[in-house]
Image (cartoon, rainbow over the protein chains, first blue to last red):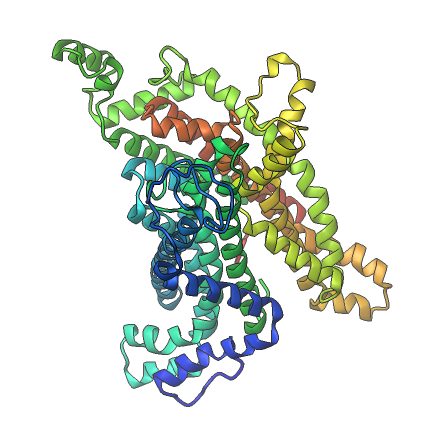
Length: 291
Length: 319
């Protein structure tokens, strides 16, 4: 929680700003800073992707299974496609999947958790049970099952991962709200006659942003992890879209002759997940969460 | 205690029942006509009708659900659609046993190492060893198991040629000959969980060391060794029981990535393949098995936890 809880009603933006103030304190945490740098690096790569890739991600050529060289820094695959280009463009796939899934889980989880804690009583009981049931199944198993029914594809992967995140984020949002909801400024808003929706959105939400930020970083890392796993199993993004998990899956039959097909996408996945996990660890330290 | 166990048992049974309904409904709602799938696309309308009649596909959904459920209780799980004539029950049991072997192997590696590292790191938070463990475990949980698996294959199979890359184990050839095939999948499976459990134990140690009762024990004049062995360890390791159990459940269903990487014939890959081949009987049985195992493990953990920690016997509060 923010160390100084404002008693006088500060403006909405002031509260949002203080919710994010912990970002500045990240400077003192080398691990978190390293994570931030890695994530910023990948953001830059995915924005600049079209300008730094020498070939098209799905351009076939006759240069099959070329090892890493100046022309093809990461080599080529069995269709003669440039692996460097595919890894770089693949960062866009990874980002868009993971960001959307995290956002979906964040919106759903926050709405559920916040209202459960705010209203209490049977609402809390009902939502709590719902989240318990959702959480009592392994995420990957649900994902397999649902994607088996809906069919694979980008949108479905986002939905599945977002749903898997929802109860976990919901639990965090709920316990954060419980710590805030009985404080004076919430009481004051209630006395002023503000609506429940206003109190939840403008009074409580800004005060649990730090906790949610840490959780978002953890969920983002897990989104990359899950979507790569689903891609690897053939349930995620479909070819010829450049997806890291899919690329590794396709590399398996050529491991003997072309190990670079697996190594570079693997490094990409690992570094992005590692970066997000480092960042989450740093954020956790500066926000003082111990769990 | 009894009341709590009874309530918890009831909860577990309801969960399994709800899961069985969902599994059945969704599996039945899958696109595609089962009769058409068995007979192929050139089947005549009459033969399709006859088969639907025989498989009771024309019956209403709830009748078929209870038929299926009765079969499950009798131990009759039907016949596979994609592998003609193969009975589902022996297939499922064989795959489940294979998964159990993998899970047990991973646990043998994970438990001692994670306890040792977690306790040492947790005793001196902020020390260089603690930082090393913190970074290493973050690394471990950042590598999806198919990446760990491929790295292991590249090193030990492709480069060194010591161990096989594919693990289609066959116990009829004798146990000892299967062990080399198990090593790489077990290692790949252990990575992420080793990281998670070590972190949990470390965090739990730190929390207990900072707690009031630890301070009270120290203030009472007890030596550090006594405080740690009698007060800290006992309280800090209790939550680890839950974490390990949750992961044990995960090992059964979530090992699908490792099983796919190594071509290991486990239960999770059976489910994956049955979903891909629209093999409804195998899918239903496999999913029901994994979910039941998962819920049973969670139930068992809760009971064990109650036995070990008298404080939560009646009300489990925040978890």
